[in-house]
Structure formats: C-alpha cells, structure tokens
Figure 1: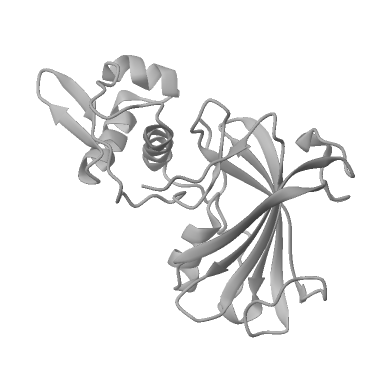
Figure 2: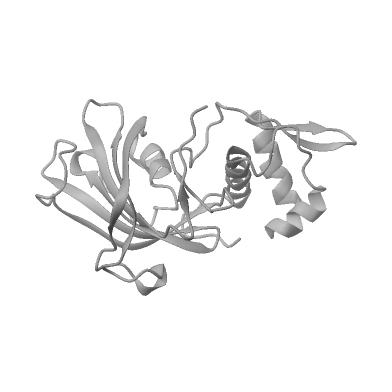
Length: 233
C-alpha cells in the first residue's frame, strides 16, 4: 500500500479503508476481525501500523478491542471519515480512494459551467481515480477562485481534507446528479474507456459555510469497475 505524495499517514489510510468496508457491509456489526498478524499481512503493512489504525477506529467508536478475545466491529452512523462524501465503491463494496493529478490550472470559468462561487476565475483539477489499485474514474474539479489557491505539492488523495487543513474551510453538503456522458477527450489511456464512449457520469455542486456553492465537479466512472452508492442512515 504505497504512499502518494502528501498522502494520508499509512495508519490512517488503513483506518479509512476499514471504515469504508464497514460502511459498505463487507464488515458487519459484531464481526470479529482476523488476528492482527494475519490482517497486517493481508493489508501489506506492519503489525505496529495496523495497531495504530485499529486504535483510531476504536477512538471513533467503530471498533471494540476485547483483551484476550480480539477486535470487534461496532458500526457507527456518526463516524468522521475523510472520504465520507466519496460515493464510488468497488462492485463488492468499499475500496480506498486514490488520486493521481493530471493537471492543475487556474483560469477563467468557462461559460458552460453552472454558476458557483463569487470569483471570475477558478482552479481546475483533473485527476485519475483508483479504488485500491483499480482505475475506475477520471474527474474534473473546479474550485472557486475566492476560496484559495491549490498547491500541487501539498495536494493528496482527498481534496476535501486539503480544503480543511490548508484553506480553512470544509464541505458541509453536496448535490449530485448521476447520468451518462461521453468520456472527455483529455482522459488518459490508463482510464481504459476510450474518449467519446458513454459511461457513468456524476455532476456535483458542493457548499462550504457560505450560501453559494464553492466547488463544481464532474466525474466519469467505469460502471464495470465502480458503483455509485448513496446510503441513508
């Protein structure tokens, strides 16, 4: 499980992966996790790092650690997750989101975008997305220019975490529209679905603490490799 530049610490990556597996139902409430040594081998990490991840889950109320017995899943509806608003999952559920930046450019907002923010300019981020190691989407995010600048050297897998830690705001709600659309011509060969071919498509407007959306994004995802999932708890 290699680190990307500016990625989450490894123990938090493992914690987030387990959170998504619990949310998807791959790990159910009351289930006992495998022994730590075997689980560490399966996740490609050390027992020490795994224990830090399990401690994080325990602090969040998602794991009960019973001395001499093991670690038991305790599903929590209120857990804070870096990827709580990331709606794509592997067909079998879960998967840790990964991102590879293809281009980050500040520019005037194109006329074909919906209205968002207050500035005339925005930062456009194009990325290739994976779940674990599976390539499953390309995305284009537009952050309103008044919200701040994005430093490529500090941007990790989660834009929302970057907003919170580097720009001082966080996304509080989002509105998604899921349809079909043609893969854009800038999509890399690694996506696997050729430009112009129809595929799953998500448009999202996201709000921070103000009345106007601060971000607009569009995502093209391979429906054979990922599913869009929205849970009401």
